[in-house]
Image (cartoon, rainbow, N blue to C red; front, side):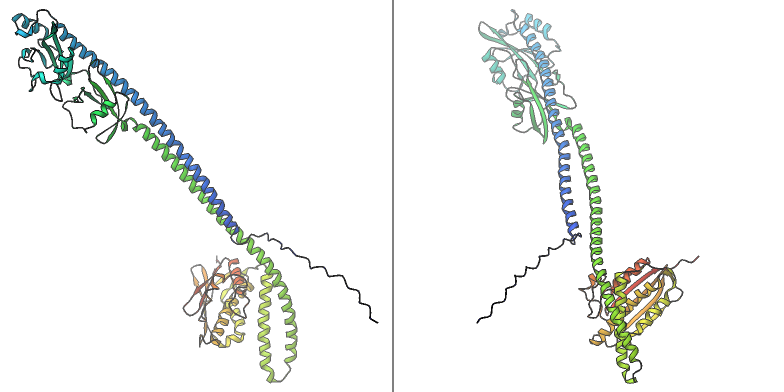
Length: 558
């Protein structure tokens, strides 16, 4: 008969999943990283605003320059047109005066000049103010018949080969051009046509400087004939080969011209019914100088304003960045200290309870024979070590407020040294002291003795470890107390090899220690106590070991 199977128990529910509670304190560097991100975004935005701010005066300047260029071209066009009209009227007057005399019925140059004809010509053109170089009557083959003055120059080449003479004969119309070559003089020639044949030519010569054209200080004036030869300025200057074509192009549309490497703006107009072209040029640089000066001032102001804004923003950003770093470090330290303080209090109470039992056992061992002195001394060493641990943990977990009073510093150092001399490690380490008396500070004696005790204790323990490991055969610790201006300076130096370089950046952090028996609370507590008294505690690496420098302000005496 089979026994009935026991009832199966219901399956155990799975353990509840505990979700991690997010910390209210940001991780290290989180606030700084966020601040840097925000700073980069703000700098980018500020840069875009700066670009927009600088673009505005640039666009305004370009628009002003364009308007000034258009106004300059309009002004030059009007000036060229007015001067060309005035010159055309003047040349028309010269042509009309010559035509009036050339059409006289008694004038027959083909058979020479009779006394009557000479009298007619003398009365019309003797010392004429219209023709500065004189007037001449030519025969049909270009020979001189009469001239005033008699030695009036007609050029070196034959008259009949001159382009203007051939053009005049072909067209049977007056011609206005250069007499011969560039530079003038200007000739106004009227043909004498009778019966369809050329009977002679009456011409007058005018110096180009005597023409009613005037250039200003800002403008340059040019007068060209149909072949591109320059009548003005006289004498002509050497110009590029394409200069004439550039000037002729201005007759169609005013615009820029390059002259001697300078950018000029120019306009041109035809002179009356002639084939002369009058050109007026003005340097663009001079026309836009005031605009450029105003633009540079505006641009300099915008750049200075942008730089000041950027500098102020960087200062504020740097201050904010440092404030965030400090706040982040404080928050992280507060959270860490709160957790460590709670743990330290629990550990301290447990160790304290154990110490009570050890001390009770020691009181029983005191009555045993003398042979048991060694274990008693070992127990006392352990009790002292545990007592130091308990005091450190309790002080770290619940630091007490400082009770300040006047303290003789060398007495506090002696108290700390006396406690250190009771350590078993002190028997193997030479302790050198040099203490100056009369150094008084305002402070809590217990906190200062604890700080000095931690410094000297660490040095003695480091020397003992160096001796046990064979690093130093004769370890020593030097304690020197002296005055430096208004401060008391305590130097604690040893030859125990120094702090591990990997531990040095975390030397002042709680529970950071490089010794197997260390707790890592002595140095942080010592620095906190010293800084609470307005002093400082620093570490310096020595060739053989370590040097701790403790500075405290001396008490002021009335």
